[in-house]
Structures are given as C-alpha cells and as structure tokens.
Amino acid sequence: MRHLAGRFFGALDPRGPSAPLEAWAQGFLLAGERELWMQMSGPDRRHAAGVARKVELLLNDGGPAPDRPVMAAALLHDVGKLRCGLGTFSRVAVTLVAMSLGRERLAEVPPDSRRWRARVGEYLTHDRIGEEMLSTAGSAALTSTWAGEHHRSREGWVTPPRIAAALNEADGD
Ligand SMILES: [Fe+2]
Ligand SMILES: [Fe+2]
Image (cartoon, rainbow, N blue to C red; front, top):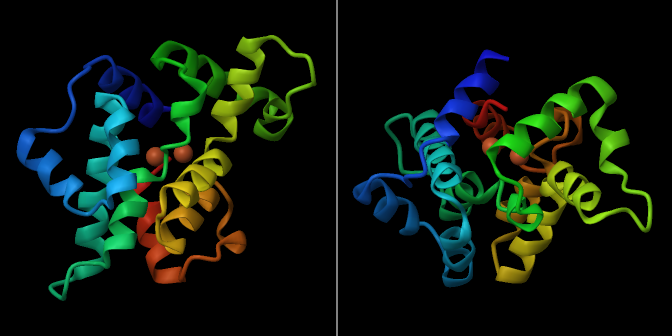
C-alpha cells in the first residue's frame, strides 16, 4: 500500500528520466523497442529506468553488465500499459478494485462491454499485451517473455531464475 502511494504521487510529476539516464536507457534498446519507449509517459519511463538501474546493480556484482535483452526487459516490462491509455487516477482506481475483486475476474471483459470496461481489462492484462507488442517490435525472446510473465508467480517463470529474480526484485510491484 505504501509502495502504491509512492508510485501514485510520483506519477503526478510528468517529467521523464534525467537526460543522462534517458540516454543510458535508450542505449539498450533496438530501433523498434525505442519507438515503443518513446510512446511511454514520463513517469512510466522513470519507473522503468529505475528498474533497469537496480537490475544492473543486482546482476553485475562487479562483473560485466547484464545482457542487452535483460536490460530491455527491465525497461519495457510495462510497455503493454500503452494500449489501455489510462492515466494515473484511473490506474490507481483499477488497482484498488482489482485488489478487492480479484485481478483475474476483472481482467475478463464481457463481449460488447463499453470502452472504459475494455480499458480496465487491457490494463490488467498489460503483461500479455506487452509480450505481443515486443515480439512484433523484434525484441529478443527473453525481453518479450519477461514482459509476459512479470506478474506471474515464480513457479510460472520461463526466464532463467537468476535473471527473473533480479527483474522481479527491482520492479517491486
Ligand atoms: Fe506490470
Ligand atoms: Fe513495473
């Protein structure tokens, strides 16, 4: 809950990452991935760059930097949120409702639903949507796979355990 509140107030600041952090992040992205990255909001890019920085710390341990696809996974794991187009207030509302009603139940959108209801479903399935978008953009399998499984419990992870654990810990949501 405290974490959610922090994310909420952070999201009210529209700025993206600092210029050096932005350049550092973009250096890990393929051309198609960069196009998606540029469509993400400032707060979403700040979150993603923060995750990538933590992943680098967790994984490199004085050794070589993590592979590019791992860094791209950190940067683009939430890219599927682009499709729903929901802003900060709606996202918080959906997250709170999903916490009480159950994510799976709310993610299922009855046919012929209104657009707002479809958006709720899209937000709650941003993992699967992101996986699709990244495959289409030409990402490495590790990048798109992690996007698809980043809200799954660890028993369901296909991503190599050490990498998945770092990506998960750095994301913290
Ligand atoms: Fe997510
Ligand atoms: Fe995230």
